[in-house]
Image (cartoon, rainbow, N blue to C red; front, side, top):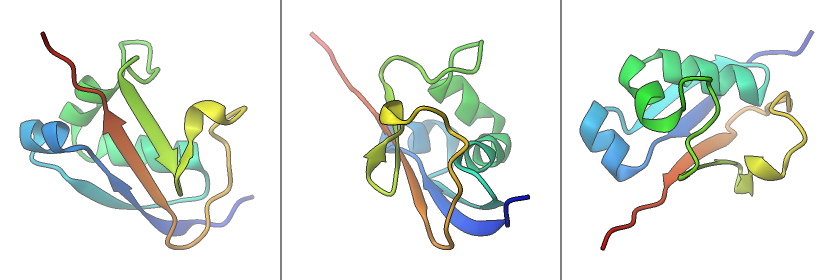
Length: 94
């Protein structure tokens, strides 16, 4: 069983403005657990960052200590105390 550590999950400016949540401090053992806990802390976050099936929206990136999680085989990566998870959201217009 993986030990639980405290990590910070940061949310992009537009999401923070829309939800009132700029970051969350959660305890988790894996990256997946931390993301789930952070998204559960404010239900509106999931709406802004995820599709109905739970995948991140196409314009949303997630980074674990600076590594794009799209480059990982899975989100079941063990966490270390003080790790940071950061979401970024592409903005476009015309």
